[in-house]
Amino acid sequence: MRIALIADTFPPLRTSGAVQLRDLSREFAKQGHSVTVLLPEPNQRVPWVLDELDGVQVLRLKSPRTKDIGYVRRTLAECAMPFAMLRQLRKSPLAATRWDGVVWYAPSIFHGPLARALKDASGCKGYLILRDIFPDWALDMGLMGRGLPYRFFSAIARYQYAVADVIGVQTPGNTGYFAHWQRKPGRRLEVLQNWLAVPALVRCPIRISQTALGGRKVLVYAGNMGVAQGMDMVLNLAQEMRSRADVGFLLVGRGSDVSRLKQLAVDRSLDNVLFFDEIDPDEIPDLYAQCFAGIVALDHRHKSHNIPGKFLTYMQCGLPVLANVNPGNDLARTIREERVGQVCESNQLAELVQHATALMSANEPQADVSARCRELFARDFAVSQSVRQIVAALGT
Image 1 (cartoon, rainbow, N blue to C red):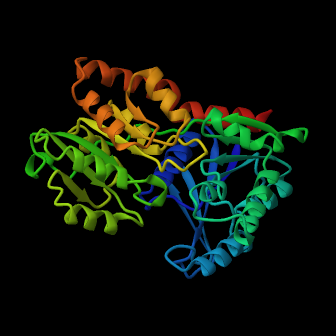
Image 2 (cartoon, rainbow, N blue to C red):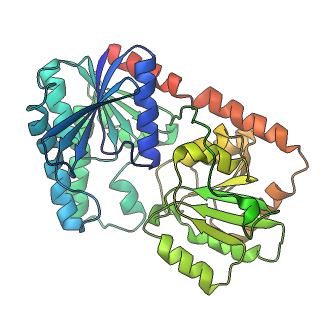
């Protein structure tokens, strides 16, 4: 199949979404499909730049800046982005290309107009990979009321849903959001698990043995540290476990809360916590090989279900997890049923401490737990399975 894959994140960015899309596009090519990734690019002067990466065409289209600017400007730029991308696409060598399927990745919620234009021109189906149910999660978190901004963003999201023939959500728990959407004939809703490919093995510059955490059982968190993650609970846990000289916490990544969290750790004199900037995704396995368990943190106010990309990397590397998640999250059931760690749904520090202590003192050999983690990854989160599922949905 000739597939257009629309996104707003891709390498050289190091976000989990960029890594996922890199792996997905590579696997499309590996399975014999012709895939072109369409990306907005605010930093280029020319209308389009066409490259090839590991057998995948990457078409970067000049568009407005949407990152690191104020909310109002960002919203206006996001609205303009798909139309700017379409305008530049029509100037590119791929202007007349006819696609067998259009796939797009959310976030962002603003790709609908571009996806519709490509679908209509080619007479093909569209598959929405939905990883983020926005603005509903912002409403749940109290970041947004039910006023005009919510109604505006909700209308944008509903439009992108209307464009899709198939929507792939992360977990069964998210299917309830689309009961009304499914009523229209021809629409299909399915669970499309998150995925990862096997990373390259690159030595990580972080050497825990050479830090203040050397010799401890280290719980690692690698990823975004923002409002949606509820990272304060992790620091609260570190403070409660400060008396244990055998336990340490390693926080690696970027995000809107990093500076505040670092200062909080200093203010509390948390000598069992270390922060590092984000690292290359291919260095993750070497980092995790030095750690005892991985941390999953989601703000308890979430009502939607989420399986973060970092959970996949933990499973892939055979690392059990300590998770603090919103009540009823499908991830909690997975962790318990698959016996790959400890999970707290109450957001109560005392209970989280109990789970952390249980994880640290488990009598089961670490090798057995690691084997279950890797088996879960291979069964449910391999990128080859995701590509076959998307292709099958587009072809029916």
